[in-house]
Image 1 (tube, rainbow, N blue to C red):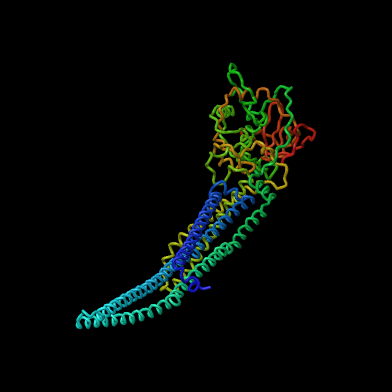
Image 2: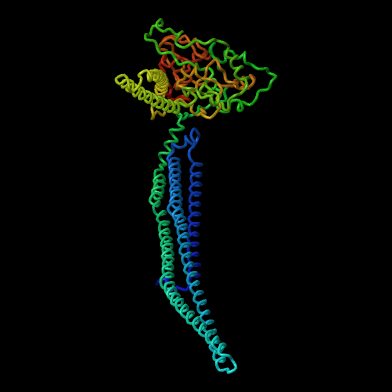
Length: 623
């Protein structure tokens, strides 16, 4: 069906229809534009959402990323970021492949349509002009015929009238002949114009208008075809990203499948394991007996008179003074030496045992004075459990370089991590040095390529950095070896029962760098020159120990070597002397013994041979 033959007289309707078709195309372009905006906004919101929940660097969340569930969540956020990227691709492709192309196509359609309808109007104007010429020629021919007919009738009347002169009749005859001639000329002109109009009309309705309408039909069909192609492109753009979106979803599924609850549980153990062992059974304390214990001149209660409080001041509840540590354990803590025990002598001879330099001597002062200072100072700790180790940590926020504020296991991991980081930095510097060395050799062989002196200064700087890093590595490896040497075996279940009173989250107050070297497990010891400050009156402390019963005997021992016992809290023994054991070695290398009712104190475990009574109260085995 052709518009030129079927719609030859529907010029105005075709003009309206083609205009409507272009408006439909423009409406579709507007739809695609809004869809592209929705996609780009959706992608932006997805990216912002993903960024919001991404792990922040140097934050607590970065520590949480070691768990498989957190890793899976972060992988999901990464996949969502890629998922958002695919929506950006959809928006970009719709903008470039549909909206831009259709906009340019619509402009071409408008221009072409305007040209076709201009030609149509021009053809209509031409045929209308020909019609007007035909009408004008027709009216002139009609008028001349009427004038010739009147002139003929007038001549005939004059010729029949006998009263008219011959000259008037001749004049009327000539006038009639002129009018007839004019009518004949008008007839010929009208015939010519009519033939021309018929020809133009034939051309107009069978050639010009069909051609123009055919062009308009082609234009409309191209518009419709282009719209269909755009719809296909619209679907294809979405289809192209489906495989990638599928991969993103597969990645999320894979991340979910990678979650391992057992591994996360193991990670929790590795993150918070302190390296200590659970405490053993608590000894039964018989409060039916009064305390009759006295100690040696170097023991705690030797200076009880110095710490006696005013009898007028009422004593406070003991339960409030030491909520986490029993009295006999606190006494053991405060009287126990802070240095590691000296090694046994190479010979059993007394002359071969120089006891003086075996542990650093400290300035002796009455222990009661230290206790008074300790009890009356301003409190700075949150929990008394830290007393068990003899060290209160560092100020909050001031982490020591060797991580001595951490439990042994955590300290070992931190040191190992630091060593790995330093080795990585060291390898980078070495690789950079090797590369610059090769460059320098190339410059020396080919001076035109560069000046060897230009890299010499850089090589010096890198060499200095390498030496510094090696020193740091050696330092941290030394600390690591120290910790690893002091940590027990993984399956060792007999550990000194100080873990119960350990706290990792209390606010530390003192620097423990000096006594860290002398702590049994490499951490949590306290510098003896820096005393913990807890505001407690001497009266309270004194009353707390007034009625403490003496420790029961759990075995006996024989001195293998002599020991002078010069440090505070120790007791001197002679070779071969038999004594009573009242507190066994708890992993720090010291055993508490009693000579008689008057003297008791600590001696190195390696200096004695212990015979424990398995049936005695409080008899335990510590490694």
